[in-house]
Length: 375
Image (cartoon, rainbow, N blue to C red; front, side, top):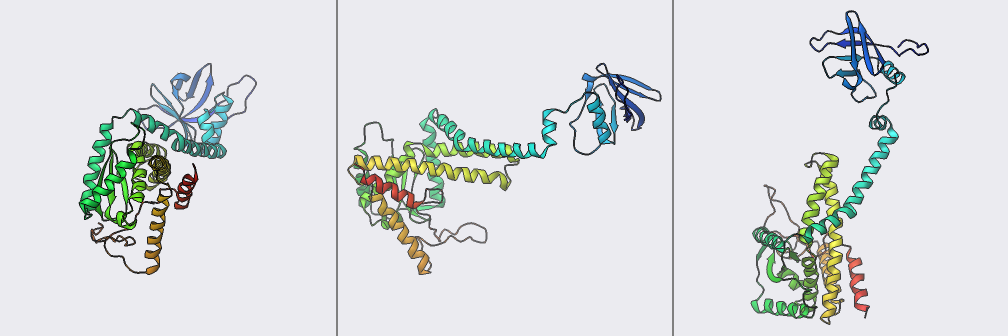
């Protein structure tokens, strides 16, 4: 770029392409009166600046400007082009300025992480609750029926618990929830299954409560403890946690895909797993609160739930210290994969009621103990 005299427009040496051939022709560039002047041997072109496309500036590489009516100019000397551009009054956009600054890049990355965290922690749960509120209960029932079908095919077997024992436990739970205020208890049904995954109890959307034979045996068929566990599961039904988790998982997955790209990547899956674990812990706390309300209404001490945790801890400790493989159906038996990668139906696993996504057992024990001490 030549030195400037007062009032003289900055000049830049560049190459001109007419858009019809690959031949580069030397020219000089000037910006005057809202136009780009392109001058060279046999070339005298004036292009209105509104008809010039200026690609975003990168830190390195050839500079180029395209003309909407055909043709372009290029300059291999990036520094000279940038000096000429600034001397001619052109300024980078805020986006380009931010891209060229590592401080802006770092600040933007931090802001994105914070925004994602805020949306994940507060935005999605609030939005999911709003969506659930307008979702018909028939959706829960359909999801629950479909889920039970899949569970029966892959995880459960028909219960071997005597019919009279099943009826006794159903009656005990029905008696407990009957003490709740009218309209505060959702429709429910209790089914028993023999488990392929160890002692467990869970609720499905729509009100189906599944209690495994192994869980019944684990707590010594104590109807008060079983009632406490089922009260917790009914809390999931009342708060429609199943549908809410589905909505949140879908939304969180979409958000992760937008931020990190292809959803099939591990990087996109990590925030979904972490986010859902957090959501699940919150849901467990809500279900525990509902269990305390049901138990107190029925005149049952919330401390009976502590018994369940003690039984779970004892079984875990026994399985861990014995060093013996558990028999099929007993907690502590690890799941092994067959050559095809599928789990062997004859081998069981210990899941129990306290999954990793639940709050810590100690926290929950403290909660039920304190609830029992309250009047």
